Amino acid sequence: DAKTTQPPSMDCAEGRAANLPCNHSTISGNEYVYWYRQIHSQGPQYIIHGLKNNETNEMASLIITEDRKSSTLILPHATLRDTAVYYCIVILAAGNNRKLIWGLGTSLAVNP
Amino acid sequence: GAGVSQSPRYKVAKRGQDVALRCDPISGHVSLFWYQQALGQGPEFLTYFQNEAQLDKSGLPSDRFFAERPEGSVSTLKIQRTQQEDSAVYLCASSLMRQGALLQPQHFGDGTRLSIL
Image 1: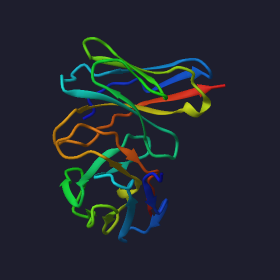
Image 2: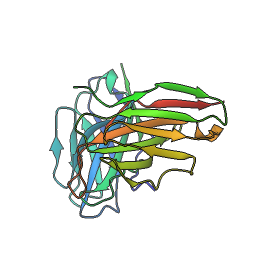
Image 3: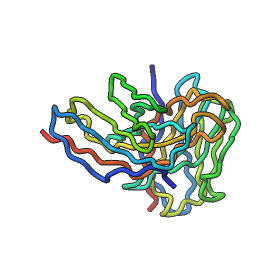
Image 4: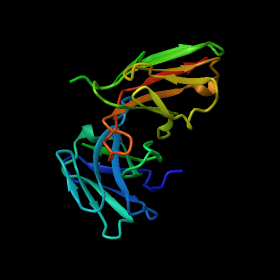
């Protein structure tokens, strides 16, 4: 069972910021939040991950609330190529259980 | 640097036939995962290897599914006596992760789309 909740779909205008929310109210203290995306007919692509601090890389920013029960993935200047399904996943930071448990994700449509 | 490579990209088989799907992970990646993705769904975990050892096969749906990674690099997922419900995209991922170590991202291939007629 996926431990995250995401809206099924979102729209965003090209050039604007896309803010994708994720609820993970049952997250435990040693679980990371990971984001992947999947462009049509391709395999999933890693975007970013975090534990409790906000994170930024060349692809996106990840904002995690102080209570860690929710997070937001921010694509600062969305392009048409960012149209994809975005998955938010929580997973233990260490230990033997390495499998990713995926929900249905958010289908983001970036419109011209 | 080559990414994860999967072959064939598409496979059509008749019900009852056996199929073999190949995964070439990123060189040096210790961990290898197989996932199954039905249309419109997120991927579902099938099995996990650390080097040649299969550490978790809890996601394999039946004993018709078998995976191996004999030399700790290339992996093959075999499905015997295929059925229509086996139709899906089969994704392979590899990672630098080692047992007990902190997480590393999984890097995915583009999958094999399997259609059973």
